[in-house]
Length: 85
Image (cartoon, rainbow, N blue to C red; front, side, top):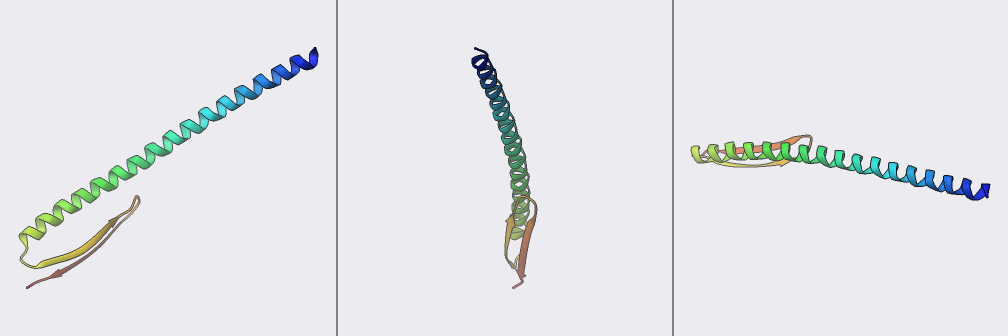
């Protein structure tokens, strides 16, 4: 009888531990998702600002502007070549 009670306690403790571990994993996943989304939104906003300035400048200049830019989560890479005619 004691073995059965001890096995039930052990089973209950294992279920509680598993439930707590899953809760921790879910919270960590939500925090990682939130941080990644925040970085993405910041990069997207930076790209939109660069793009609007780029378009304005292209419409104002008589030369030809060629370039490319690449937005990553932590950095911005920008290459611009201006050809005046």
